[in-house]
Image (cartoon, rainbow, N blue to C red; front, side, top):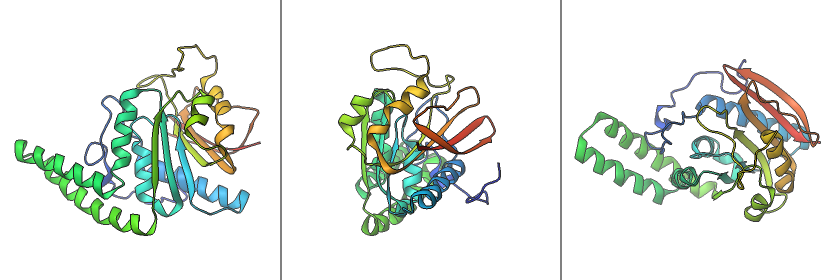
Length: 252
């Protein structure tokens, strides 16, 4: 898959999961370059299809620790006005709140204090690197919050529970959904009432329309075995990179 927007492999070490961002043990981080590429493609599609380039509300119903949500908000804050994440896993939601908190000066000050204590206790080079990265972040985030105020929200819900999603997100307010759905290796589909779902990905798509805006774009990242099909959506783009398949949709 040729990259359209992130054509060069940049140094994303400051954004590495586990350095400043909190990581979820056993869950590999989503590649920064790919997340940025997908996001920029969605922004371009939204502008072309709907002639709408206003800052968007970005939502991930399978957010995990909200690593790629936080990365996107850090890299592309000028295109985002609100970041919302939800996940069925209580521990993931707690970590997601901490990661999205790093998009504020207060959150970074707390993180810098934590890493400073670790450096004092263990003296590792990794902690020194983390402090350098956090200091760079602090400057950028302070500047961003002055020019592009960003709201964040995280809540616990199954990605297939339309009512709970609507209880936490304003109707017709989400402009861009970007989610890396469970593959069954490090995470699995779970419904809030433990109900078995014959097509969980289709059920997730069916749970979204109530919160999608009139100019919404939905990007689904999955493995090749899962089919992204739903009568309520029209496919506008698809590509594969490695073991991942990316499908970009708009409501029909």
